[in-house]
Length: 202
Image 1 (cartoon, rainbow, N blue to C red):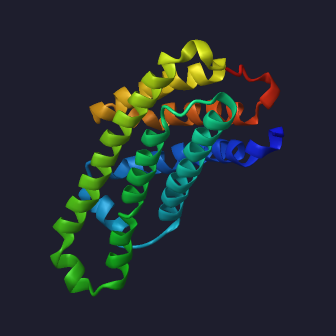
Image 2 (tube, rainbow, N blue to C red; image 1 turned 60 degrees about the vertical axis):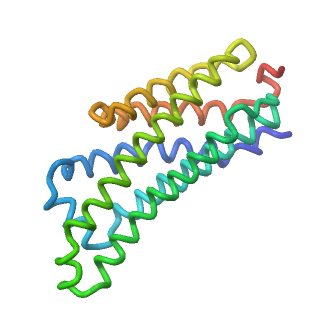
């Protein structure tokens, strides 16, 4: 296996580390302000493209993490958790259909269902953050349980995953993930781009 096999996931992780804080800092103004959130939901724009890109690339990155753990380290303890994470990210991304509906339906129908649209969007988003937090926490714990057999970068990733999980579960402190998540992505990028022969195989 050549180092280039995981070049694309590594590049994807770096890209997510860059665009994720840009998106969430921009969207932070809508937190607690239903009017701003509603205006964003009423149309499809660049922010929606960023949102979908972050989730799709995150899915791609974690699936490749699962693959590299299986192939190079014979570690399959987080496979199910990664698949659940993929499903939750897809569910979260499905909230974009509300934006599409708001853009194509008549103004009367959209206005009449404003509260329902907002409630669905917020409920799915908060639920996704909490569930993803639980998954991050479990991934971190499972990796740390095998820490003596894993490369240093994966140990660091495991610690970051635990931190992400705890912050995500609290919801209140989830905003700090704007800065934590990019660091986690950079660590994964370094792991993907590292030469296979330098990994501590078990």
